[in-house]
Length: 87
Ligand SMILES: [Zn+2]
Image (tube, rainbow, N blue to C red; front, top):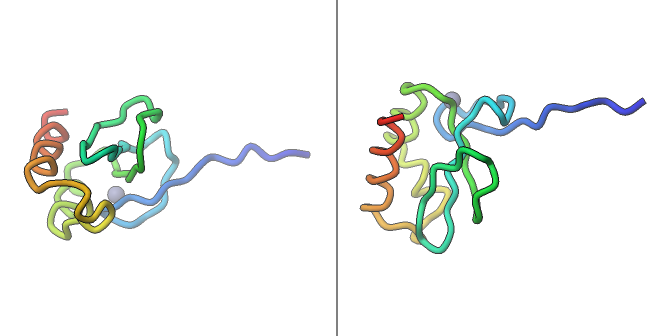
C-alpha cells in the first residue's frame, strides 16, 4: 500500500518542519525575490510559517541572506519583508 506522505518543509525562522501547504514560499530567481503563493514560482525557494513570529526570527538571523547568499541585494530582501508583513 502506498502511503500519502505530506510534503514537509523546514521554516527558516523556527527551523521546524511543517506541511508545505501551511507555509509561505519565498522564491529567488536571478536576484529577484517573489512571494510564491502558488508554490510554482521559478528559482530556489525557502519556506516560512505563516506567522509574524517566524518572520521576525528569520529577519533577525538574516535567514534569507544565508540561504541565497550574495545573489540577492539587501534592498530586495527589505522589499520582500515589507511585502510579507503586509500579508
Ligand atoms: Zn516557523
